[in-house]
Length: 361
Image (tube, rainbow, N blue to C red; front, top):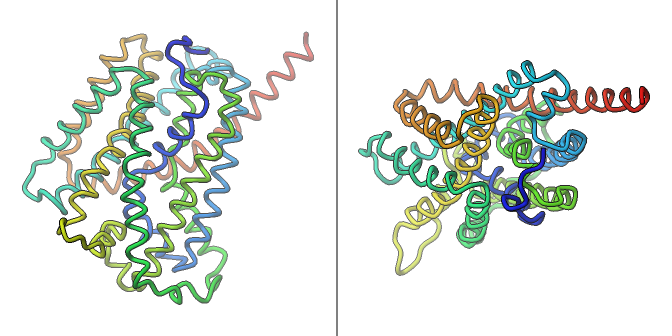
């Protein structure tokens, strides 16, 4: 079911939504993760993962175009109202857990790099208050935040890639393809989770004016973020040795120490502060998806479901590090199986039902 035209956005803005949904805290630390098995050939896995995400975008547009609505409409069309909403509930929980994972990860960065004595509940409340203000303004406000999250931080990202190249060792990348096929597959799996986020399209598709025209912008968004992640991986690989990378938790943040300016001593403070725009807009997008889905499923006001999700997030931020590891493992598994296996199966089932209905008519 399409949304009111007053709440819809232009097709080209999908580019910024895709960028916003894919770039989060993962880009600050994924270099170490993908290099654990495939070494410095892991940048090839990032490109391969980007190709798989392009195929996933094609599947999403086919599926949502046939249902002419969001994932809840897809489920209710195939399984009926009761079972369809029950299955949709798991997707909404995933969106909330994804936002929670981003929030916990960024709070950890703030506590390690800037304010080590600051309690988690204060940081989570400050971030979630701004997120609540954004989401309560409606989907167009969320899209506006996505646009800002692309415009402002790009200057810092470009600077972060240029300065380390002065002392880069490109010989680190040689020889190319000296790892096994299974090692590359492992790096692709890790990269798929890192550049995940396009599944938010399952909820905001009805809010795109002329959704078919936005398809090319979605593919361009994935292409841009894939190149961004690939460049980030290559810059880190040419700067750190493999031993250094294994002990560096946030390689991209560590690269900020190469940037020296006469008027700014701690560039990482500026970088992390500016990165708050990206994180807030990403959390806002996922919480908008989750709260809107819960509004439809339980027939409640979106404001009430949003407040509940924010309160739960503040409480869970107090949990220890073992919970964070368990949460990340659950999200990785759910992302791989639900979105890259279950969603394509839904497309096949819906296509079969549509053709059967046409034959009966």
